[in-house]
Structures are given as C-alpha cells and as structure tokens.
Image (cartoon, rainbow, N blue to C red):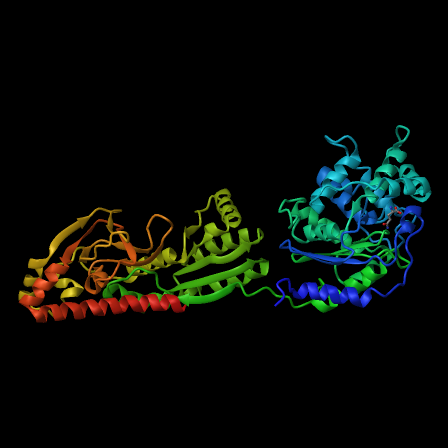
Length: 614
Ligand code: GLN
C-alpha cells in the first residue's frame, strides 16, 4: 500500500479536481497589482488541531492576505487593550453591507464590525507599537506567530493599493470625523491607512492560512509549532465575529450553507474554522460579487457537506459522563481480606457506590452525576467518584461538585474521589473553593484501588462487629485448616518466626532465591508488580491468615512481584528444606498444607481475573 495514503488527502484531491475547471468569477482589479494574478491558481490546505497538514494544488504560491488580516489584528487589539475598550471603537453587528461600504452605525457612529474595512481601519488604529518600531511591525510579529514562520509585506501590492486607495481614505476621514480616529496631529489618517494597507499586503500561502485557521480551531495554540498565540477567550470572541460578519453581506447565506466561522480576502484566500478540529484554507483569485473567492466557497460548501462540519449540526452529544456504576459487591480493591471481612463486604457492599466518570465533564455532565449520586442517597453511605478516565472538568462545575459534597453529606452520605490529581486545574479550583467557604477539603485518593480500599475499610469498621484477633496463633492460620494439634505442633517445629518493620522489603523481585514462604500472623503487606521504586503497580495486599511467596517456593519459579510490609508484620517462614523434612515425617500434613495453600491461591487468582475482565 502507498505509505502516504490518507483519506483526507484523497478527499482534497477529488475536490481540487472537481472545481479546477470552474472559471467563473473575476480577479479583483481595483488594486491594480492584484489584477496580475492568474485565475487558474488554485490551492487547498487543511491543518488539523493535531498539527497535521494536508495540501493540494498551488498551496506554496504567495499572495497577499488582504481581509483575512482583519480578524488577526482584531485579536491583537482585544488582547492589547481589552474587549471593553475595543468595543468603544468598533461594534460586533453584521452590517449586511459590502466590505468597503462608506457608512458607520447610526446612533453610535462607530463601524458595525471589525470585518468591514471601516472596522478594520479603526482596529488597526488601536495597535500601539509597544517595543516595536511601528504598529505594523507588531502586527506582522503577531501574524508570524499565527502562521508559524516569519511573514513580510509585499511592497508592490502595498504601493499599488496606497496609490489607488481613495475609498479607504474616505472611510478613514469619516472615522476621524465621527471621533473614532483621533482628530489630532496631521497625518493620523495617513498613518493608520498605511498600516492597514500594509497589513493587507502581508504575503502568505495557502498553507500559512490553514495554519492560522487551525490555530483558531485549537483554542489559540498553533498546532504546528505548539506555541500559544491567543488566549482562549480571545479565540471565542474572534470566532463569533467571523461567524456573523466574516463573509460580509453573504455572511447569513454562508453560515446557513457552510456553517463555519470564516474569512475571505480579495486576493482570493478564504479560511474556515471548525472549532476543536481543523482549519481550512483555499486560494483561488476569481471572486464573486461580494468579493469572496468563487472556488473557495464551493470547496468549503462541499467539505462541510461531505465531512458534516456545520457547527449548528444538532445531536452531537458528548459520551455519557458515567461510564460504569458499581457497588463494593462487584468492585474490590487489591487488598485480599480474611473471610470475616469479606462477609461484611458481601453483605453491606451495595451501600458503597462507585461512579467511574469519563471524557470532558460539562455543565450537563455534572448535572447527571449530581442526580446519580443524590438519587441513591438513602441507600448509600459512601459514593466514590473515580476521575481516572476524565480529561477535563469545566470550571462551572466547581461549585456544583462542592455543593454536592455538602448536600450528600447532609443526607448522611460521604462523597470521596479517586484520581483527582489527574485533572489538576479542577482539583485546585475545587480545593480553593472549599477553602474560601471554610469547608473541609475534598476527600481524595490517588487511584481507584486506594479509594476502594478505603471504602472497604470504612464498611468493615462500620458493620464489622466482631473482628479477628490482632495476631493469629498458628492453629488459626488458614494454612493449618484441618490439621490436628499434633500436626500443628510438628509444623511449628519447622517454622522460623519472623518480624518485619513497617516499610521493610520482605521479598524483592531481584532476589532470585525462592527457597521460602511466609505465613502471615499479623500486619499488612503490599505486593507490587515489578520493582517497587519506579512507580510499580500494586497487585495485591495481604493480611493476617494469608501466605506470601508460596507459589515461587513450591513451583521453584522466579518471583514476579516484590513485597513490602505496610505495617509491622509478624509471621513464620517455611523453607523448602523444612517442607521436604515435613514430607518425610508426615505426608498427610504436607497434603493438608498444600491443599490449604492451593485454596488461598485460587482466591487470589480469582481476584486478578476479575480485575482483568472488568
Ligand atoms: N485591502 C483590501 C481593501 O481594503 C482588503 C479588502 C478585502 O480583502 N475584502 O480594499
């Protein structure tokens, strides 16, 4: 198979083929230099939010950006002086008029929006040089970040437009007359108009434009270079204006049929943005009567239809926020528990509910989770919310989740979390919100296993009643089930008492000696797959009455896990040698012992299988 095969590439090639012969429309000639363009030039580029670039046709031919510069300078102004200040000079209402119309809004006397020339000239006047020599240098610097390469002005096109730009000068004088441009020193109009003409004469190619569009699609981060160009709120403002005003007096028709925020330029470029997914650019100089590229419109219409890109397409619901709902009867931690404790969990396990969430949690998602928790409040004592598979939670959910903790608490329940740390933005805001309200911090556990273990211990504590003695005698140990007192004494004779301090390593995976096993009399032990230090995963936890290392010892096989004492641990070690001696003395005893061990191993294997299958 062709290694460069891609369905997107194929699609773009088919679109290019379909429209390449369409020669309708006229190349702009009111700027004389633009009239030299060949009407046959035609390129399509698509850049995904992941930074993958697809292109076909004349995508490396340079042309001037023209009006596609307008949203970029608008974005710069928004970040430079703030939205409120910008809106004193230019509104965000679609005008329904041509891009170069010489009218201002009735009443306010300011341009209707930043996408028509009047609004764009007003916007350009708001850019201070700030560390650059001229405003245009700061503007070019911004555009270059958008495109991911150093952009420059085509002086020939600039001269051409500057020589013939009476209409834009007329607009600028009108702006000055109505106070949008400063009255002040001579040459204000001239300077602003030149800045505007220069920004329009910035040289780009189709690929640059698609990268610019993709930057707007991916929250303001240029997906090719990885650097942030705009803040997220600026992107939203800019896309809103593009959706309502980007295509001038054809904006309504465009939103209806293509349904993507977009911008065109008279040199023949068009960009369209699908938020969160991709940026598209088309270059083809012949324009329709609105000044929009004819092939550009057709390609965008086709793409939108074929790929179902219309932003108003209904029914795009996110996946449900709760991907699994279980109780402690089905969901268990890795801790292996003695029979008495298991009994408690079987009986009361359904009083703990585990909600595993997934994806991006929106406002609607939090509403669903709230209901899932509260609907069962009278049947549950604890709800554990696992966030390990959550990619993000909206900031609007911070007070909702905080209130849920308290409300569930008032109903007698306790809401706890696992995996909070994986979404630091949310967990920090939640903690701050709780602190500000003088409330307890959220109760969180690093992972689901730790959360489950805590819930189990809570249930056992609350409903356990009689719990086993702290330290088992040998005859109480699971390994001696069915043995006579004489056999227990015989076994005892071959055992060596052991004590491990909390935190002490018991068996290491690196230690290949497998010549003994441990019967645990008291304390807790964790077993880790791999080497403990390097973030190894806990695979099981053992407590009194259980055995450690019996499989490698009896099977004479290498150890697959390391073990460590969580608390002080006491027990008895049985060596391989001791086992052989017992076999000679009392084969029945060894038979019971092995049978008991096999029973315990079976329980553990059952646990692991359950974990694998879930
Ligand atoms: N520089 C051009 C002008 O002001 C830009 C217009 C456009 O691209 N629609 O006329």
